[in-house]
Image 1 (cartoon, rainbow, N blue to C red):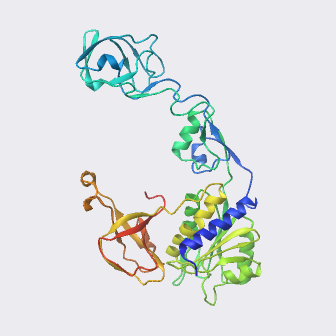
Image 2 (image 1 turned 90 degrees about the vertical axis):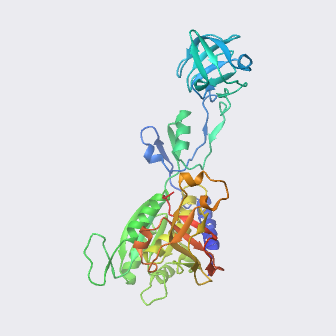
Image 3 (image 1 turned 45 degrees about the horizontal axis):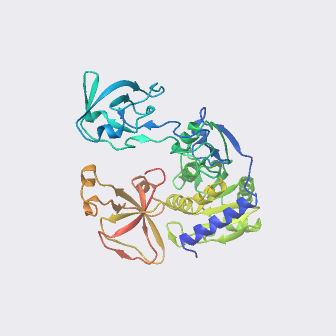
Length: 424
């Protein structure tokens, strides 16, 4: 049985191999980010993007104020003659001479001859002159020409995942049509005779299919495309037919049927289809009976059927594979530290991902000295009834990670916290 770290690394290794062999490749997509920005968000660049000119293309003011020669306001108060203005989109047609100044707006070109900007808050007008009450040094509040990027310099690399800043960068340099890698298509199949369609009314011992919904959402958050296949009953012929259908996609994710029970048939059917398994158990709770392998050159994840187990194991194991198959680097688990509010005790030997809620300090607290315990984020576990308790997870905004060797963790200890994706 692998640790969750080792299992995750194995998934990434195999996914990279499949990507490098071209087994997961499809034609790249071309997206106009000016017309369809939402379609590009989260996609991975299949090209490089270079600056089309120097940035900024002029010495740019980053404050509203007055462009001056720094030597003229080295000693204050200083009185300079106002000779014009420069605003964003236009420039002052002239040069700042000795004992002269030009009013300048944020984003506007700094006139020739000026080497500093003094913020308007430290000045006052008097006739056709400006009185300066604060000294300036050369370079104050000016972004120099070409200091951000030079013409032809790469500003976005192939393999970059597009967020709002990256899309703004592409738009700024005129690269509005971008080539992005195709999104992996992920077949999602739940299993179990007790599972019915989420829109149907369950009988006394039936449950609605929440796993297909949650997995589809997690697939989308991972930048891939979900292909829901519904639910397979606990009968080999029907299960095999749906699995074979799922193997037409890039990845197959199954929930349920991976334990050692009489009707847990997923691994048996995959074995008949000549699947190669790399692990069939992971040392975590919830989610221990998670399996991963390759069948017909497609990645296959067999996740436990209890909803919280399904969500946890997808985030830890399947999400990095989708990052790789999307053409990007696997994003690390975004663990951070918080102080434990109340003592907890867990059985050692497994890594526990417990539904929890982290609270951050208020703005008033954040003004206190660094290291003051009042500035620390705190976390407490949510009472839950086990891996089928979706209500508990709804009340949580993170998972508290208890390492395999830990048993009792005192209140006030630093602990690892894994945020629910999209919550922070």
